[in-house]
Image 1 (spheres, one colour):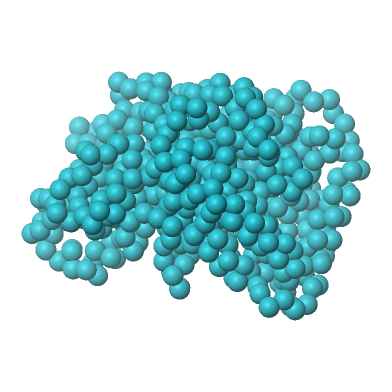
Image 2: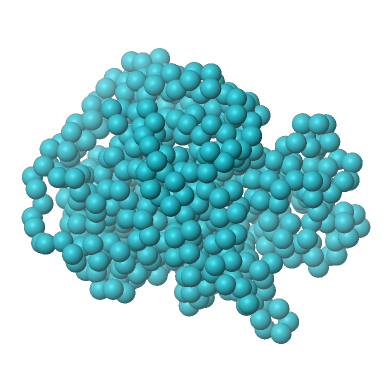
Length: 564
């Protein structure tokens, strides 16, 4: 295996929304050489790959950033960092302005004013949003894009992060990236739980299936502190297509009704997880299936909904056409049946991810984080991820400026040698085990689905089930060490499985530690079915001796105590 070494003033891992805007910000600040390393190709990678039809975090005239920060805090049932929310919220509208400058089309009312859904959602034509961001980052002075390299290990020398190691997904090549500051922007974790669809549809997830928790895993193994992984995100989505539902509920005023035609939303909390909880409860008592329904649709409204979904989820339009719902629009109620997704770990909708300070610095010197991989700051969406990318880039460059120039210690070479040896061993190992990546992935899904509160367990878990999950995950991690790979693509899949197993292990530890049910829509702890004021705190963790050590912090971020 060949090894190539590259040096830069700033390394950005992940070329999604946050990564691209972090690179653009660094270029504007004349940072020097900025490397953006992406596992796929930044033109269509990350959560924006298929586009979006609205900017979900943009303040309508007359509303202030503080309102958004308070909304996000309440939606998270109080478990959120106000300092992170406020520093993000003050930048939201500026980020939308940046996107308009890049060519994003904002939908407008008849009088020419921007078209909003409520007070914080802006309608756009956003199918090409990721190519616009990718082009801006690629063409920015000093920015170099490295596609198709999967970074899976941070380089830590003398207690600080000095770069990272990755492998090409196309050839036998190890890439070493050295930089005095690193921004992790790799997104959250999908594929931890058994997906809704089986067979050939198993990768038709709501959250991108290629977001495998790699940034979280490498941060954990390097010793970074994590927060709120137990605040999983379960999305309420359109059945079969897993398309988002906000376009119907907020954009078209659709009612959330059960099989009796009753509008049940008023009976439950109007928080994000409350809407999921309400739908689950209606199904449990036999009042399902539940739907989002527009009672008196007009042909113009249906046509507008189709245009909106073509901007981000065209399969939903195909589904309506397949069912004949588009044949005579307006003749009958129009809508979708609702379904809950499997759980995800993501800091863009909920709060799981790296524990950060206001500058988006992690607990590892030299490492910053932004976007879905950043914890404590829910309800980011597109504009919030960009805001965090900007904050992280500014802080990372300030950190570099404050460091005295010094050559990299030779210690990083020993770390690289160990990483390369591990990869070469995997590639050289004969396929002698009776199981492969798919088999262990299925086993992971079985454990998480049944013992850690997946759809198969009706999103419920208990002390005993989580203890069983922890034991089984340890066995799977040991089995994964013996996997073999014949090609760089196979090596990528082995590494992705390893990342998922690490993140799943930490997630289960967090679920067990928070002894209450604070977000019933996202999961229910059967042994502790109620919320408790005793748990108005952050559940954090730090990897130690091969497993996560739980840390409790109060809402101000101060240490309460270590647990186990």
